[in-house]
Amino acid sequence: MTPPSPADMAVRRLAGALIPRALAALVAGWVAAAVTLVADAATGVAIPVPTSNAQAILAALAGALLTIAVFAVWMRTVVVGLAAAYVSPRVVSNYLDDRFQRRMTTAMIAGFAYVLAVLAFLPAATGDGDGRGVPAISSIVATLVVVVALLAVLLAIRHAVSSLSPSALVRALADGALATMAVPDRPDDDVPIGRHAEDGDGFRVRSDVMGWVQDVDYHALLDALPPETTLTLPVPTGEFVARDEAVAVVDRPLPERACDAIRAAVTVAPTRSGERDLAFAVQQLVDVAQHAMTTTSNDTSTADEALVHLRAVLGELLRNGKFSGRLRGADGRVVVSDGIWDPADHVDAALERLAPQAAELPTTRHRLLLTIEALESTAREVGDERSRRILAHHHELLVGDATTGAR
Image (cartoon, rainbow, N blue to C red; front, side, top):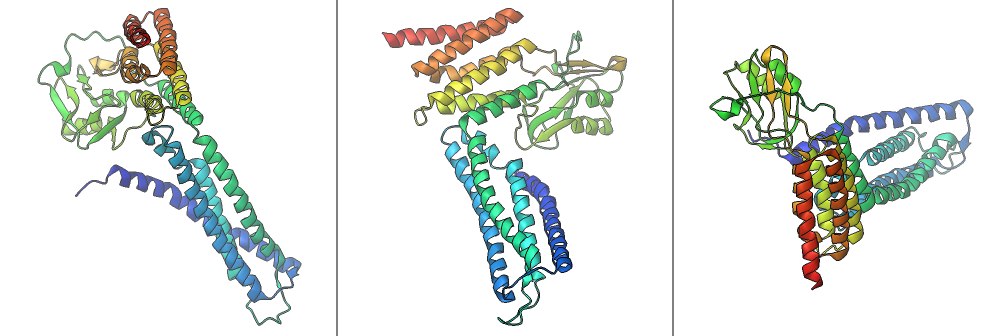
């Protein structure tokens, strides 16, 4: 059986989140209609219009609600398309859906259910001479629901434009990277190990799925090991693993139950996520800066904003320092992750991508030079010599390019 694609998985997750909300909205709309209809029956207040006319108006209001809901969703896709001209489409595609849009859609469904319920419980039409009229409270509320929905569309457009502006996207990506950095579960024990499990022909625990490693539960890995056992992770968070590739290498054979526990401790997903994958979180900021520096975009303002936020993220990373990637358990159990990036790796990966493009744009090159100088000062302050050398190297290259261009 063919496994579902990442797009199918995303649709299923979205459906799983929306269907319960939609059902709850339908129930809420029906309950609200029942309350207003009971109030109408208790007060006896009616609008003196023929029932057939009221039915036509309410049916039109229900159709208007559907049109408004579709228009609101469509307008967000238009705004996303416009935002893709300023930042990487891969980045902006993550913002096609958000909590505000879900709440607004839920409210629209509740309003639609309310109008339909009121329409269904109107008294039967007996001709144009029917003097009983229609329930006043329910009919007025149904009209107000549509008016509020129209105002909500304006609010939705404003929200989409403000949340998908380049500045807002850059800030959201920077905040996400800082939040990823703040996750406390980082293996940082001082474990002297003379020989790693992966140095030889260790026992390999192989993946039964294909995808990106999104999270590793190091404590669960320790619990799965017998005493005096070392486990090495060849695929830390952010790495890609294929089916039947090793997700762990152990220095002794393990029973199948322990292998299943190890696989369960390594979360593999079809797509990457910046929630725990710091390299990907930083890469998205670099994507924005790179896209802004392309000849088709040439958006120096967005590039500058991405660079100053990247400076904040990388500066915080330098101050946090590197961690060992090792966790010691009881009875000689050890988990080793040698593939974890140092701060210098993140710095080098970002500058290797940004420096060549920035060298062609004087304004952006100056901003990148200021970013490098600030990070170099931070690296010197915290004693990260490797990062300082990398930053000094890129600084020299950019200054050399500027000197060559001036000639």
